[in-house]
Length: 160
Image (cartoon, rainbow, N blue to C red):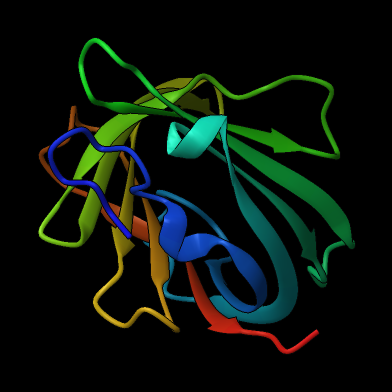
């Protein structure tokens, strides 16, 4: 249950076991329309009394199976969430994304580097269907004027 006044528990919807359907562009920021799909799982739970959230992913990516995890922590001073992604194929954490939820939609922004060029990154969480939330990632090479969605995760509750 989201606590809209403080932002606490914003990720409570994700608590539990999930089947995840992944849809990814084969090439990013290359005007590609070639998508591929694969399955995965996710286990998620709240920490810090709802001021944080962890998830653990198994991704059955055709390019190679891997594990990844997300750590989220609300900034008690700003009410914004900070999101760190840890990809099991690399030894470092990505820089954090920042954002918040409004009317059941989470919007988060950050920066990264793709092929040696700085890019903007956007995450959108759509939680209008509690048992089927959706996450989308998009990149922008022009400072956020144009966005290319390149990864979509559709979650469905798992009985495991």
